[in-house]
Length: 331
Figure 1 (cartoon, rainbow, N blue to C red):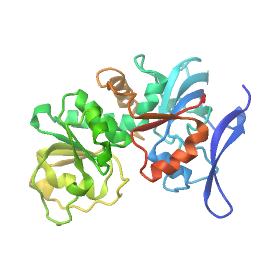
Figure 2: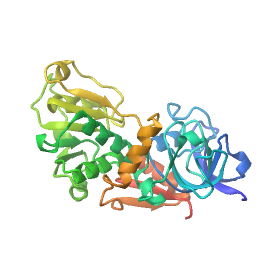
Figure 3: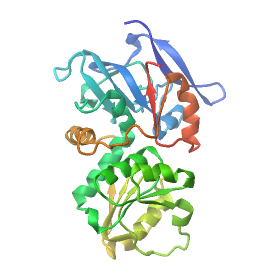
Figure 4: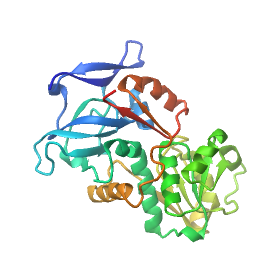
């Protein structure tokens, strides 16, 4: 086991952050009782923030971003994992304040690792990644809440993004009527192919009237963006419906009133994929490999090399990526 490639984000002399691929030795890796050879990773908005020095994501640099990784166990000090096991790592502190998946090798605590379900390939697991896992947690919340297929449509905001596009596909597979909300009308065909019944454009959805409630339209909402879109989602959800919340790409601020909750009985359900308990984590990954495995999983996926990550970081920050982008560490 010789030197391996890893992407390092460093602060430059002019206070900007630069991403370069460097060669490192296994001894360079941090603490953890399992050593994994990474086969695939994926690109998420949080990775892009880490790669430009966002201290809300990563506090100390130099750093290797990448909140997702899938690979093969090379060494293990824990009896739960054996050499040759195929595994997934997402969540916890991975890729945030500990080095992440944009690397040919990682060393992590065994408590962060999920064994790859038999019906899923390593590549497929990273097409899902944290985005797909978050989408699945959102769907699980709707099911646990009791949202039925025949009670009305489910709106998915940010529908062309990683979480949104997978949420559309899972809900469609489960026979829900799905409406995709997007600011990109040119991607309508993509969303219809993913299973959306129709789309709503962001410009038509945003309401600046400051009315405390609006006409009801949705039985439930999977919100991936936050801000004003989440505010209007709450105002337009039907009586006793629910809205899940998992993102803040539009804004981390939420301006609302109590009226959706006390006049319509709406529930706002938080989604956290980082500290999700392992028992739920394993069950959701199993669902993603069986009952919820989407038929079009390989659609709208771009596969890149480690050398192409920096360019794609800029694209995701500019909102120019659609679907999922995965990193093949063998390229």
